[in-house]
Length: 204
Image 1 (spheres, rainbow, N blue to C red):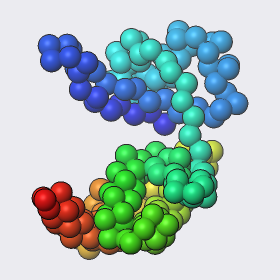
Image 2: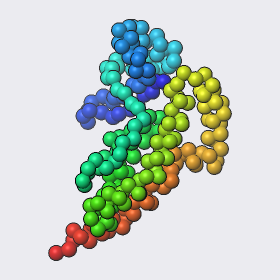
Image 3: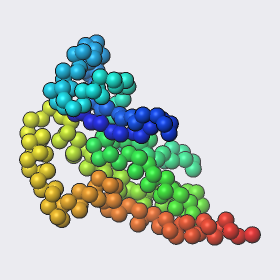
Image 4: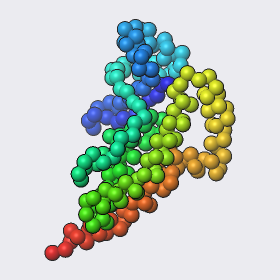
């Protein structure tokens, strides 16, 4: 799998930058480094000719990912959020969104709950369904994009892709890839939390 993600500029007048993704099995990484860029560029050209200019100047950084779920509660009054709690494949592109929702959920719970222990329980209850659902979907969908299967890519491109353009299905897919599936924000009662917090701050 290959991908290009625009990442803006380092400074206001600097040239635009992008991150070039090239997916390998972990066991193949050492061989890829040993073979070098000259052996890699023809592979990029066969897969995606337009991306070769980016591959020619890319500065490789080895990054790994895996599906991982840890107990969210670390200890007394301490919890994990984001990838430290629920790491998944990047296929759905929801890592940052999930972490922000975790932080918002914890903030809301701290405002509404009577004490810290109760706030953590409220936070975990608010996030449980959304987190578990996206972890499940990530596990199910990853093999369609990164696996040795010859059948799954055919199903993805010629069966699933056309189905996702249908009006009702398209709305579901849009909600999925924007992180809105199951309406996670509504559970957090953020407007109430903001109003309560503002009231507390404004008191003399």
